[in-house]
Every structure is written in C-alpha cells, then in structure tokens.
Amino acid sequence: MHRSIWLVLVLLVFSGSAKAQSSPSLKDAYQGCFRVGAALNSAQFTGQDQLEDAIIKTQFNSITPENVLKWGVIHPRPDSYDFTLADKYVQFGDQNQMFIIGHNLVWHSQTPKWVFEDANGKPLTRDVLLLRMRDHINTVVGRYKGRIKGWDVVNEALNEDGSLRQSPWLKIIGEDYIEQAFRFAHEADPEAQLYYNDYSLENEAKRKGALQLVKKLQENSVPLYGVGLQDHVSLDSPTTEQIDSTINEFGKLGLKVMITELDVDVLPWPAKEQIADVSLRAEADPKLNPYPNGLPEAVQRALAKRYADLFATYANHCGLVTRVTFWGVADKDSWKNDWPIKGRTNYPLLFDRQTKPKPAYDAVIHEASIRLPSATR
Image 1 (tube, rainbow, N blue to C red):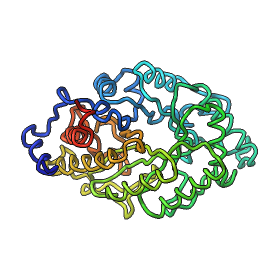
Image 2 (cartoon, rainbow, N blue to C red; image 1 turned 90 degrees about the vertical axis):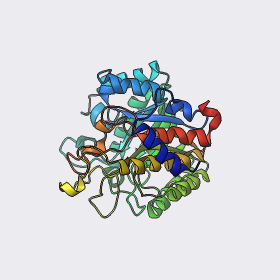
Image 3 (cartoon, helix red, strand yellow; image 1 turned 180 degrees about the vertical axis):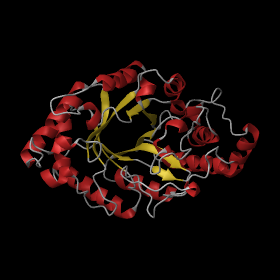
Image 4 (tube, one colour; image 1 turned 180 degrees about the horizontal axis):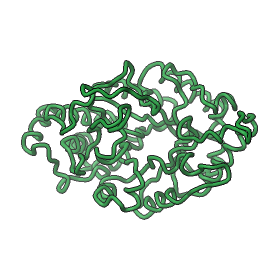
C-alpha cells in the first residue's frame, strides 16, 4: 500500500491514538538495524515521572542525559564535582541494560566562566586550559569507564559557514583543542566510542566544514568513532535527500553515524535561518504559537509522514547509522516548548502531553515493518 494512503487510513481508524500495546516497541521494531534512544531529564531516571519512566523502559535501548553530564552541572566550581544526578543516570542505564551515552565533554555553552579564567578573571594560558580540560575529562570519563559506552566529546564546534566557532576553547588553546579533547577521552577510557556532535550538518557549507574537520582528525590518527547528526528538523527542512547524502558522506570516511537529538518542529520559524543554537532568542508573537490548545489533524498527518520519511531514510543505512535518539520522550518536556520563544506549545516527539503515542509513533513502527519485516515479527 502506498505510504500516504496508509497514513490517511491509520489516522481515520485510530483517530490519532496509536496501538502501542499491540505493536512492537521502537527498540524491537528496529532491532538489528540501529538502537533507538531518548534524552532523559532527571525526573525520568530518578523515578519521579512514572509515566515516562515506563515509556523509556519499554521503548528505548539507549539513553542520553539532557543536562546532568554537562560541565556546569557536574563540575560547577574549580575544586568541586557533583556526581549525584550523573550517578543515578548511569545506574538507571545499567539496571535497564541500556547503551549509555555521555553528553558532553567540551562545548562552548553551559560551561562556567571560571573554566577559562584565572583567579583574577583573566583568560588562562593555553597550557593551563589544556590541563583543566584533561583533568575534567579524565575525572568524568574515568569515573564511568566501561559503563558509559559512547561520549559526545566535542559538541557544536562549527559555525554555519563551516568555519570553527570562535569559542574560548579555540581562542585560548587553538584549533587543536578538538584533537586534544579526543585524545584525553581515549586516554580515560580506551574502549569508549567517541563522537563529534553538531546540528545542521545537512547544510552544504557546514557539512563541508565538518568533513574537513573529520579528515584532519583522521590524518592525525585521532580516535574518532563516529559523527552525531542532531537532526533538530522541521516538517519540510532539511529534505530527506539532504539527510541521506550527509549520512553517505560521513560513511565514506569510514565513520559510523548517529542521529543524536531528533525532534520535528511543527511551529512557524521566527528567524531567517533554521538552526539549533541554544543562544538564539526571539520575541513572542501569537502567530508563532498557532496551536496552544492542540495539534490540528492536518498537522498530525504531516508530522506522521515526516517521521515515516525520516525513519525510512535512516533504515536505508542499517549498520552505518547505529543509533537514533529522540531529544526527549514526550511533548510536555521538550525544549522546543520554550526555545527560541518562551512559552510556546510545540509537538515535536512521538508521545503527546499525556504521554500517549501519537499517529507519528504508528508511522515509525509501520515503516519498520516495511523496511525490516523480520525485526517486527
């Protein structure tokens, strides 16, 4: 049956309610192709949110922390680490036999100012900042050696034109800060998979810059396992053709590809360029928040089709794409509700605000039955 016909039928028959109870889980549907994961907040992995806790255990076999392993949370002061929530996150993954991801080690955002400054507030020297980076990576990665299986070592180091972002890491250490971060992580856990992670790599200029970066790392024998494509996408951009070609380009370099932060924005975009830079802010406007009381059926259909097309693209690369991780579990907790405009109501995930599966969930499961029929039996 043609995919568009099937989508219309499923929406009419089930009126927006999915058959999660009788369907295979997401992780089972794509077993043998790639892992399916979710980014977790602390309420989910500490048991405070029982509904989403149950979804996570049923649907996913890989987890990523939204915030608890970022520098500002785990290492807030020079001589003080706080592993309270990070330990609980890793324990949750261990108890549920999940592939645990560490996110992230080196990033320009959510890193305290003290990391880059001396006691007088002046920029550190290259050597001192490298020592500070190494201490942090050795301490954090070393603590979870053999338990956290993969690390986003460097996150979002590129500008939209493919050039290196002028972060404090670059300004103080120089271009080799990325190489050094990977070497420190490998030193701390030689068995862990190490990734470079970024958004908008489907855009030609940025992808070209990322490919050049990766090639340089490979030429210098840097232990890079794969590249994370964040895929914070909209209903129509980037195209599946762009995503497909991006996966192929990194695959040609002998790298694995992870879809690391998947969600689909259904709201009007407030800026000229659609990017996932967390620093972006826009003015509130009712026109940019058109669905405060629920998603219209036509948009539900569009969201289901978009997710079906995305997973068809990912499934065409079984083995090259090793993991697809949603950035969140249910709509109510998505960062898209407050970014880049505070208070918007967005619907970017497979589970709604009541944690019920949406038609998009069925579309993703159905896509597996087409592409991977043996996995869904």
